[in-house]
Length: 413
Image (cartoon, rainbow, N blue to C red):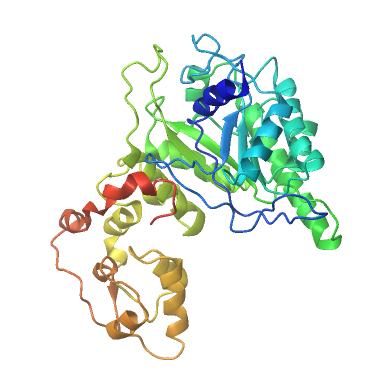
């Protein structure tokens, strides 16, 4: 099998892994190497279903010793198998980079032979790129659950970002759909990576030449809809992961029923709008100080697809509104539908000099189209009148989410 055939097979096999966004790395070019990583990350393009396509995104192999019920690469699946050598991947990356096809590498793999064997080959790719080719560009690799901590640490010193995929949002789902995988094999390296980042980060404060350890942090991915779990279960898992392992991002990949299984029979492809709502809620957890229990409850365990999570929360807590923007704190402003960090900062800074009015907001280029139902400005309320929460929800159920296919990977709230 030649390189082109391998590339077609292993690039196609990698399309279900969505955790390939890049940002946060500032790896500089030294000693006349090739490429560099910047804090702004890589310029992305997105396919029509919202997935990142700007990196060279491939598997090292689609052979796998495991038999996960949702995975197209499970060992029983009748599919053409292919495997790259570390030298072939490094050569492909450099050739594509020099031709300006890509600006970095996202590399994952099925588990061949055992976790350590596969992890060693992934580390070899990173070593070839960094040491042989002097490549300083962005590298994102997926660590193999169950691999030794020494190999995980070695990879962390070579790449910019690492993914250790949680796979499924609950232990029950993992036991049913991926019984050969153990949750401890996933969470233990996450904890080790967090500790190493703290140690190397502290050392860099004292010693300038301390090497960087995962400058763009660690991420994870979970498949949603494979075991009919609720959105509440999903975001509670995400909240726990953020709080425990200091993750940069949790990525959500809706189940695509590409493999026949008695456990996933009758489960349809997850709507992209559901993914979009989860990404919106995820951003509220990370940046807006929301809790999972703020957004959903046992009586309302799934997001309303007709309205964004923050607006839905505001409607359910309408007794907290309207708030006066001349007195509200930063985080109170952040919880107003239609306001985000940029608007909140503009308001906080501007009101140091004068009381704000609607004309002031217009001059500051702050839109109140969505926010007007939840605020007063210098005592003036311009929102529409409504009789109850359902009526307000109908007013705010905008058709603007028709573009969710393009937005599902962005921080849109």
